[in-house]
Length: 142
Image (cartoon, rainbow, N blue to C red):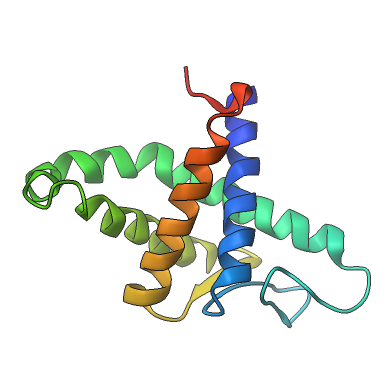
């Protein structure tokens, strides 16, 4: 259970970095109608709400990666082999897009302006950050 919490923290951090780098990746909450753009810099003392919003989206992203991604990877194995593994980037972008769709039913919304550029670049950024952060001893899956 502790490893899952670490993965949620890593996902939240990776989403924050991706939102900071890419202007088309936004997280907004229903309580505050303004979007949390570019690393969550807003006015006032909303820092705790922003951190919780990123952690909530990181939780949804972790659940999607835990349950949906293995099935999609198995079904797309021939295409992944044919493209020498590059199709994994598209799978990661699709999981991010699925997270955005699922978050539209919650008070915290992840919006992605375009599938190809923003989602694919965000998937690459999130994958690199997750790879680097997985070297943390408590973040490894057992």
